[in-house]
Length: 131
Image (cartoon, rainbow, N blue to C red; front, top):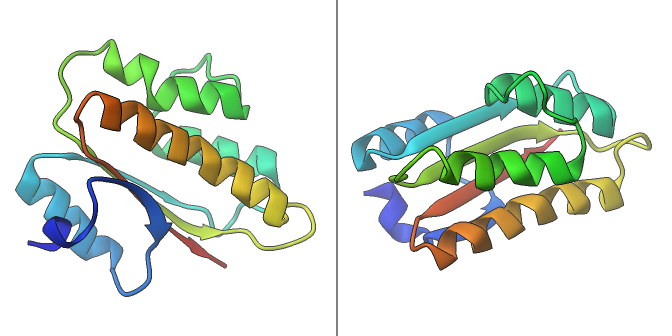
């Protein structure tokens, strides 16, 4: 199975994996699959808005990195036992409005979320690609 070849709590480039295969692997493992295609997003605000919409965050989502972390951890944790997560962030922008520093800050939120879930022994795998 595809997920057995990937550490259970990691944020990594999507590389040779296809979103369709990751979806199938998540379904086979009974885990949540969260997918955001960020092709149209060009700024940090647009990236956060696209993720919030794709992941069905609540209307009160603050559209900042702290709120993103809260939605990926506390909000979900309070919803009850979780089977695990496969997250795909496809086509992160690579431009002056969303530069390397902004990308790393965003990915740090997902790394922190992976650590949060690792402490609870819940798999959290995040895959990303760039435009």
